[in-house]
Length: 196
Image (cartoon, rainbow, N blue to C red; front, top):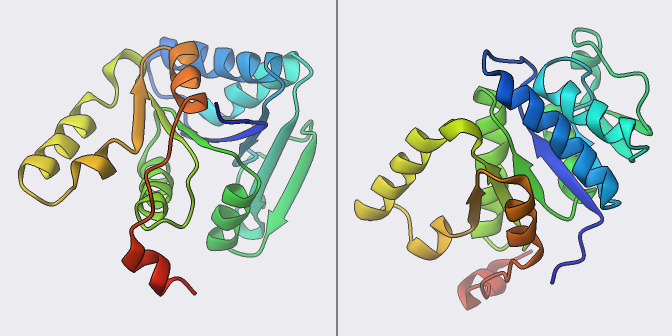
């Protein structure tokens, strides 16, 4: 079992139009706090992001927001967080999120959410980390994406073992159980040899 004390949550800064997404985001925050798992996220009080933070804070959970300086001026930053970390760039923000987390959960979102998800999957594929990566597929939101990934496997662009790096469920508790039970694959020797 993985000892998870903090999870990075990737999700939208918009609320979208599915009420269940908002409810599940809040519930995720609550459940993480109840399990004494700190939430690491993008620091906004708006959108799906804000609901995760609200849920955790309502249960007296630890919430760490990480945001680059230029977005701090534009986004509505949550002022009630346990900790707010301001970085200079987006890249530094993502590096800090990775450093502060024992794993990652992705909820519905847009381009930024997908970019963050695929970056951490790519890092795992390259052996740069061995942390669990979860996808909370609320109301089938990510069904088309999963079909695309399956097509990548069929077409020979994605190895099955790398596809399996993404842990998927539509139930929060089941997804967290999968993440806690995640066993990373062995890093290929050629990657170990080329690591700096």
